[in-house]
Length: 454
Image (tube, rainbow, N blue to C red; front, side, top):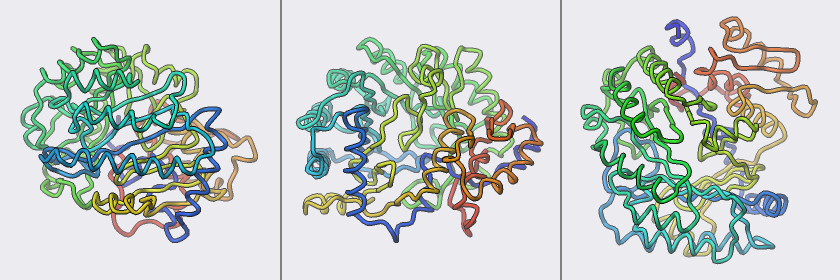
């Protein structure tokens, strides 16, 4: 990768887990009543044909990982578990009251925070509570995020018995220097134990998350981490760039100076080195920042052109309706997005009052829906087409004009009605999508809202 391309295109940009992106949501026109109407409409259109998805946010962690930008609450008090899960189930019942029939759950993901902060018994009560008035789809995709330091065999067995077949572990980096910097002391043996235990129990997909561009991280650290990862050969790997967003309230990144971080060129070298090592080990690059073995369902989704991307990242199953339960969780009705209150006490108080805790969101208009499809196509298939008149929008010619320079740089190929992202262009998918992001183009932010694209 030529360093001049890196410096040229390394600008702040969205990761496009949604379109419109959260900073461009029109919260002023959002209403709880309209969100409910959209949820009911989407449920009626899709429940019997494809089912629905649930994302459940479990925010508690025993210690602060200083690289993390997620919504979390640091505590060693496990007395918070039962009251919080009671609130999640009460929120779920508020949605159940809206549905004309029993929900069929296709996809369920436990994220955090640290889901394995909760005891196995409490997680079992949560899942049983969810399915008291819901059914499980055929071939469901149930997954959770496990912390290698506190995920026990009991967690894995209990959730497997509840239908979970996928687990992802946050590895980040195996080097002590980096682990101390990010406050994530995690020996390789811990990752090895939980990976092997999951496989022995019967999990069909074990994933590892590895981050490049962390404070004080060097190329040799990435090489060492991937060499150790190859000893375990997880089914899928998220190999992604550290997002430096110190302006977000509640994260520990303010303790890092820019000088503590690798340069954009060094980060790109880390990625290219890691990518080569993973490909030599038999991994296939999936979309953006993800790799999978050919035996994994994520790779098969690419082959079948069924790869999807939402607030949970890349997934091999798509549902029209995804509900977010828990503090700060985001739901997607396809026609609108809705996010829950970000404060635990506020979230719990609203649920206790019988009020859906959604505090902001966005209603997608016709233009939003068209552009959303294009960005999903580029993120998931590395191409998009506007041959169908229904996928054309007013500012499409402007978007293509903005991409001419990228075409000259060999990052994309633009045809009469089609755009394809080249192998050389893969690292710049976010930049390519930004040209289609008319909201971003119309209103460039005056302050930095997003992490750097490279």
